[in-house]
Length: 305
Image (tube, rainbow, N blue to C red; front, side, top):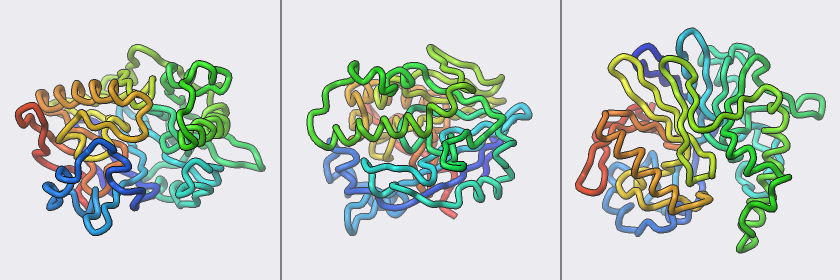
């Protein structure tokens, strides 16, 4: 189990799933092949497989221990889900809760669950299937959910969302209704729907970071001299650090996501914040620096075992 101490906050990475998802430039559509090939020496094998151009990623939860409480940042895909929009994760069956236990966390120990946004791979373990019903996995936790996303993905507000342009977008939108029903609705009675900003404790705070979804957020950690920013899906691949204007295929508003990404990376480079994306496998957090109008990775944290 990989751990890192940042000031008074202990950070532990708990992996639900790791593997190849799709061709790299299907995930980051505007990225040219050259940016992958020119950086193959360090993109492979943690983030890219040059042999078959596969984007390699992890679905994982960050466990933060801060001021005597246990905070989970994002909860992965979850088991037993009907996910026709993403067959790779349809009815997934993993030992995630056992891995969480290996990190010293039982479901009843969790005080706060942070969903950086409402996508299927960030809210799944919010709930578990019990006697045919979806129930909160973490019975003593407060769930922090961006209000903007809650309203956007609520099926009752579907008329406010853009009309799907093709069958893939229609499947994704239909799938979001399933996600909302099995992973969001059952925890709403114990959720805080926050907006503008939210202070978790003296070390941790949430801020809006729109673009990937309308309510996408980041979590900032500041403790002693240490700084980190958990960026969720603002960055799917290191090539988006090298060139922030490349958004992922999953972004609801790619142009806004690119603007937000650059702003967050600029602050991280200027203030020494460790950048912690949701889906980097292996070497999964990075210190970055400016490189002209771009950025570069100075050092990796949470190296491959």
